[in-house]
Length: 223
Image 1: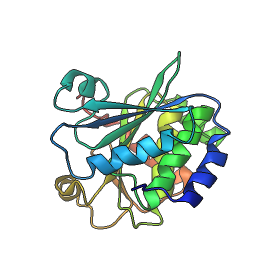
Image 2 (image 1 turned 180 degrees about the vertical axis):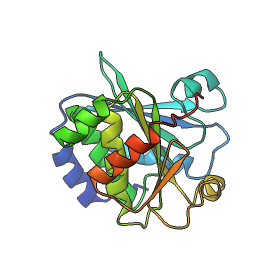
Image 3 (image 1 turned 135 degrees about the horizontal axis):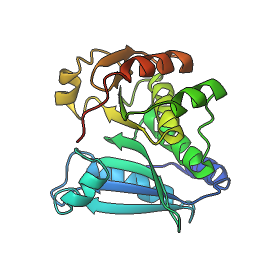
Image 4 (image 1 turned 60 degrees about the vertical axis):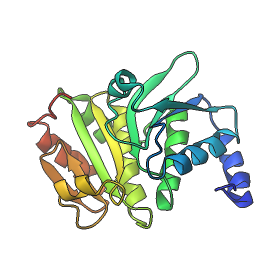
């Protein structure tokens, strides 16, 4: 049974007609299926069926630990939104958990953004990100029913595309309760910057940038 409706197919086919660079969705699951792994794979396959510009690459998290480590993947289901084709590029844009509900729109927006290769951030934000000298890790905790979460995910992923030093994860809080507990996630969206700073809500671009600059003094430890 298809997860995307006929209306979704028609709308997305029109949106994806604008893709200028091929997008490769790299998914990690495992042979012993995790919760929502099969549904996540089906969503990606249905998106790829809409246009040859979207490619899906599936990997086994348990059988390919070196590749998972190369992508920085430490939990599943996981999706890396990357550029495919002859000049592949990984911007550090990640989804952990099924991209359903409101988060499906985040995935679609990321596909369009990665294909364009333009973050769309303000010039002042681009300039500030260009001054970073140490890696930064943004973890945005979300749920599928949160209407404000896509704004927070979108901004974090824009920053990851803009700067090679920023890695940004959308983490489905219900699927990873141990992480929600670790970071005291009582409501979503909640953005964790470098394990040291927590930001509540979908904050404006300048506010997140200020928080990133404060956290830059405490770079994320190497994996």
